Amino acid sequence: MKVPLADLRAQYHELKEQIDAAIVGVIESGSFIDGANVQRLEQEIAAVCGAQYGLGVASGTDALVLSLVACGIGPGDEVITTPFTFGATTEAIALVGARPVYVDIDVCTFNLDTAQIEAQITPRTKGLLPVDLFGQMADRDALAEIAHRYNLRLIVDAAQAIGARQHGQPIGVCGDTTTLSFYPTKNLGAFGDAGMVMTNDATLADRLRSLHAHGVGKNGAYGYHERVGYCSRLDTLQAVVLLAKLPRLAEWNAARRRNAARYRELLSDLAETGLILPRCEPGNDHIYHQFTIRHPRRDALQAYLKQQEIDTKIFYPLPMHLQPAYAYLGYREGDFPAAERAAREVLSLPIHPELTDAQIEFVAMHIRRFLAG
Image (cartoon, rainbow, N blue to C red; front, side, top):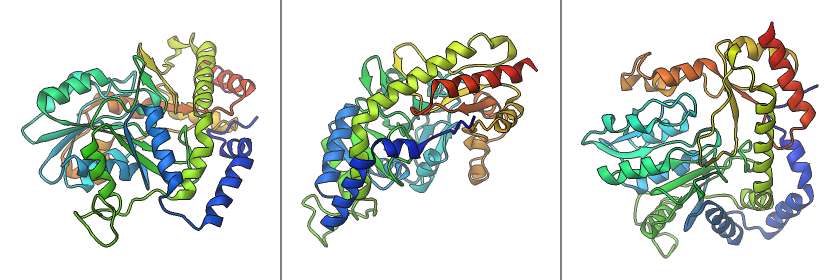
């Protein structure tokens, strides 16, 4: 039995009629940039996430870069973030000329350990950039309190967490900005790169809207530029694909949670073998962008599952502080032991909403078989 890590073809066929009609409508209209469909998507995503303003941009990475620039962060500034995440988070900080400063993670939740943040704050610290990793929100109350006390900007990378909640609050309620990625394998995925920035600050919203379109003025008049900007508009084709999918997001997230619960039922008795299942903190509504287990023999387990035609992936094999691109920061192995341990042990199992009970049971059976060997 083949078990793919994602099944985008099956998802497309569920919505083929709506998506095809929407794409043809855009082609026939000849309007491919911005317009009513992009504006509608911005409003609907912001509403889902509890934010007042949304701005569609070209990618999740651009959403981070534009957020940092809009918040006035640049050369000479420091931004505290996590070493255990996709490279775009650190990359965005570096691209605006600021210095990434890392704080270790909680190895059980994979999110930033907020108890360690204050020790890294210096006079140059201008922002916090936490990540809602794998679909579980980082501790918003603690982050907001630290940001307020030290007058820091709070920019949340929620690329993997659309639809998540913490103590009933959605991802966009807290922070100066919250960013999303609509990369095709995300819980809400486009047919290519796409992203969004959300905020509850009208001034920031105006600044972001100018920045994403070459620094145009507030009235959007062609040929007039208030600031140095970027070319990071959301294509209308991506917007209509996302609009077709958005009504299914809650259902798909619920399916991911059911799949996670089924994995727990089948694997929860294996702790003595060294298997560690992902932890969901109380009050968090985890949307399981990934279901990431840990085991000391991760590489051997992954190789065995591959032999059984079960797709898995390592998110992430090397923490950011040990990446060659960021050697200039001067970090060394051992600086962030929880992140380094996670990188050695994590393995993400198939969790997508198209997964069948039989496939989940097949995956669990082979994990049990490997651990019993």
